[in-house]
Length: 448
Image 1 (cartoon, rainbow, N blue to C red):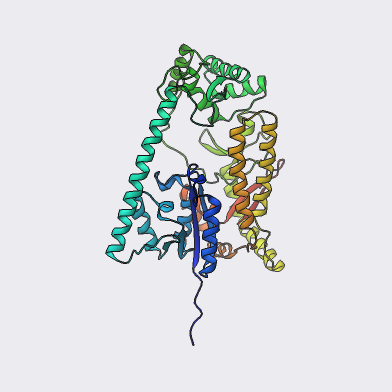
Image 2: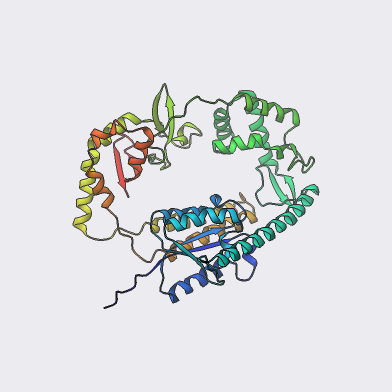
């Protein structure tokens, strides 16, 4: 009696660059449709779609987020085969191809192009792949050189080559012109920082005076942008300057003198796990007198949140060691009694994306962003939303095996011997998030 053949678990990989989206057969939709049809006709189980939009194959694969997510699934043993439409969707770089091929072979994962035929089992087949990748890489390099030349010429003529415009400018007739109200804020940022020499103080001042709350990293980048001198890509007089050279160079001197490099870097065990009970943002790590803690950056940086209390790392350690076993047992018992699937987590993602689309629309209607930015962000969010909708049909069951395995450990005995990095890995293996009561600071743990 013959055994029933097991369905191969397939990853459908799609890559498009912005330019290639307009070419026949390279659009996201065309690849999505062709790969889905092929998988269904060949009795393959579609595990997931991995879509890198606006990513060129010339760059290192480490910059392709969805590609990296797919390789994580390869290493986790979740895939048997990877499908893509053509070899150039996969790589245009021989060196990177063989790095990834080694990983795939180690985990017994094959790949297949649906519009081309390649054979990696013979010397001739491997030579053919080498030749095709070399040709694709050469073609991409030549195209890149042509585009680079065109862009350099545009920059020399003062033309804009990107839709990302620095705060204080707007695009008019393909050139940057000063946006008066925003430019006033930029000048005030430079002036105030030059006087106080503190980014934190500057953030608070701008927030109070103009009601504009920049992120810390946004302010840091703003203070270093040479576009405010009217320079771009080593071209002087690219556009009208907002900041005079003397002020700009003095600010650069202050920025350089304020850099502090610590001898050691602490590892914060709960980074990324803790949520502010008021604004819902992730709590940021802080260190005061060698005491590691977590606090809301919305309160301490720009006063957009009123939660001004800190979560002590040692106290949180003690609470979890005393209570985690009981909470896990209660969670497992409750799950097994209900004996049903949990709500699909992608429903929450869909809600968030729809809210972002509404917010984006409001920003555009209030003239806070330009049309090109609106169009770009709208297409990106819509694509993500459609992808989630397509993947939301099958309900997701909660896997409690990891929690049960966790209970078998003598946590109290082993915890003191763990490094901070090991403790971080331990908690991240079972804990999704930790919320707090705003008054009592009592933690509430959410598991995967």
